[in-house]
Length: 64
Image (cartoon, rainbow, N blue to C red; front, side, top):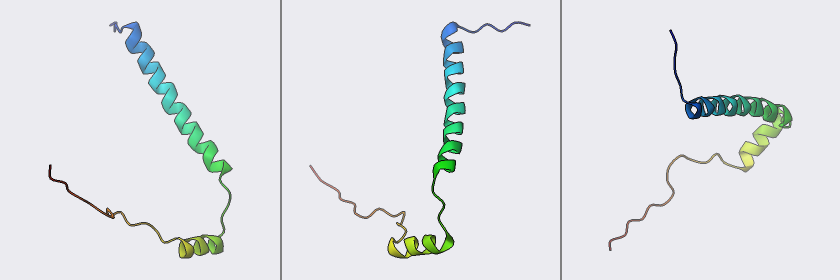
């Protein structure tokens, strides 16, 4: 059984696979580079900067 695929489709598939692999590796590298934060520092940060809500702050409607 043979499968035929155009050069463009093959190239796009390989490009997407490489992009996904690089993104995965970059996430790992970024996690290693992040500074360590102790529990005490984390509580201090959360106390100073309140977690944002997921609600929209303002909404406006215009009639033209």
